[in-house]
Length: 269
Length: 251
Image (cartoon, rainbow over all chains, first blue to last red):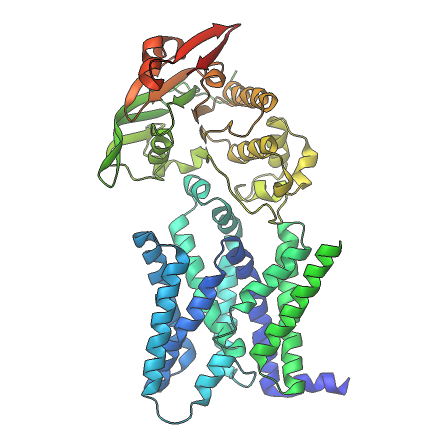
């Protein structure tokens, strides 16, 4: 019991757990619609693309998180308009932009001299990385995105299932789709602190995919995805804390284990 | 008798000199027609004649090159809440966890009674039990009826359906015809459907719009769809036979 309570004793763990609670709900909700819209590669792309924003912020000596968020929003808007204007497949557009932006990030980091612990924490995630200001940014931004998500959930579901039907019915398809891209981009960057650029998109996929194995209704799909996301993050953080492992990798492996169990359960049912 | 009065002088749908080009190649040329209020109308034409392009451009889903489309006397974007559209192919992940009730609920206007959903399901000839079924478990005919029930949930004035009888068997088709007549007669809904099934359509509609890249004919079917117009539409081998108040196409 003492060992469990020790988790909550350290301020850095308190911050990581609170941030994880916000991120769990956020990624579960967006992941449900992102998997429906086959947009999980978008999260992967934006996360990698955010390296350039982080590199610029580190070189300029400013806080990386807001800068990376702004950069990710620009990338999301460019992806949105390029998809429409070039008629190229979404994964092609994302593939071009994410590699270009990541390449820019690598070149920029080349100008930064010496060891960059902050950059490493962005790449692989760290439970030590969440500062109080990060927690405030994560809490406020997540609340705003979740308020938008639940206010327009029916519209967002309608346009994810039947975009043309939604357009004819008067759903503001362009605005809501662009908002979804921006929300996804911002959330991805918020998750980078704990999971890292390389692994953050797993949090978009694993809770939704695990819930899909168990849910029978859309309501239960959303609820189970949230529960699974919180379970993955808390268990991953705890294992990471006790075994002194990188938080991002641990969360992803715990999530993969849970998904495997759910898939086996569905197969045996 | 329709429950709503739709006796305005303006037609429900008015299309004037509509042209659509894809990459400078004309797909539709100078199409004009009107559909009166409370009519069931069908757009007829062979494959590749531009039927789907016509309704997509009318709804703003495909950009028109020139021309004007008005519904209930207004531009389409001004009265979207009064129009419903059932697309030709509703492709979705059949494993997606969503019940028919939840599927219907996503289009329900905020504040409207949940019981509305039950009523619309009964209206399209389905049992209420289907509401708890997963949408991926529905047969083609059931899904078609659910799509129509969803489309009429908010009592649209105009219902547009693209190839609605595709994938439905003869029994399902008869039921489908009954549903559309019910919507016209009970609610006064103006219905425009795209079809390649001349026999089914002629037994159902009040007017036809025949196109093959341009307008061939329009009006009440018996007057508009003469043997000559049918030949213009489908080629010289096309004939129209009448049996027991039903038309059959042989082409």
